[in-house]
Picture 1 (tube, rainbow, N blue to C red):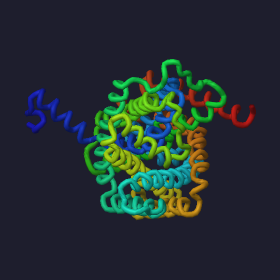
Picture 2 (picture 1 turned 60 degrees about the vertical axis):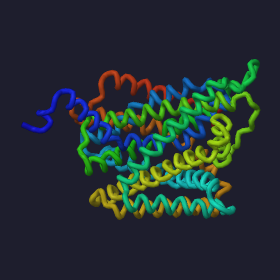
Picture 3 (picture 1 turned 180 degrees about the vertical axis):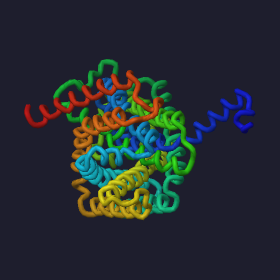
Picture 4 (picture 1 turned 30 degrees about the horizontal axis):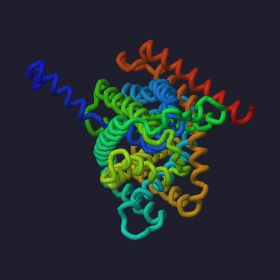
Length: 425
């Protein structure tokens, strides 16, 4: 008789729960990649500028993107392949489009997150080191961690960072709610339902909860995890749900923080992510207490650092897999991943050293590009998971198919509205 069979039902249930917790990984890393830009910056600004008006939009975009992110988990569990391989099976053209989008996103996102991390690191470093030097320090730490441990190092770090961030942010919101809204009772803020607000909504939706290509990174992390430990369908879906639903909840939590602390106060929001990251730390400190300023700065730093290291690893894996597929070579070669890590890092540092003033326009371009390509890759993910022969427990249910079509209508509808607003109006 096997050890599992000899256990009591209660012991088996406890063992199963421990296995689920142990299998947490790709979903948490997805959450770590998502929280850095879309949550800390976009969600908090949404609450600070518009109060609670955009809460429904945030929840809807998370709901309607859900099946397309989940498709990557089901496809990889059912076939053993990543979504990148799935795109290649559909046609080489899809792979080239994915590669181009990935390269742009990888470099721009890495440069932006390095600068954010460096600005927060400056809180703790002696002297007045330039941002370029601090960025190089952050980048060196990321590359050392990744090349020394790769998946295991990233997996463990992501869990710690997300746990601390969740506790700190929820604590800040609870305290802020207890203090009541900072806005005067008769304050009427700007409306979110005007054409002037449309650009902000588009940028927020493009990276909420994350750019759609993150679904490919999650499938690659899952593929890597399956080589190191046993992963069941139940544990993979559980891990994904924890990460994805957690990011949706955190988005509303950050919006709440902005709505409770900044909305209606007349505080001028910094335009740059770097300036806003310092403003965010001050917001936590004013809510929780000045004693917490450096503690929150540490948490915010590790949050952005976690996003940075996750983005470097994930995009490099995707680019390496794409290159190997194009060249028809054996997949999973670590040297290619390391090579792409170095190339992406050098390009990102080049932007920081020579094109810092152009970084924010690049970020806006990357966000708009993510928004415009989301419906395309959402449909590709849906098509892959519905047209591939998968085990019964990995096929989309009728409810998930209905949600997918509702999501496609929602995403393509907003895309048409954006094209009209941007170029035809």
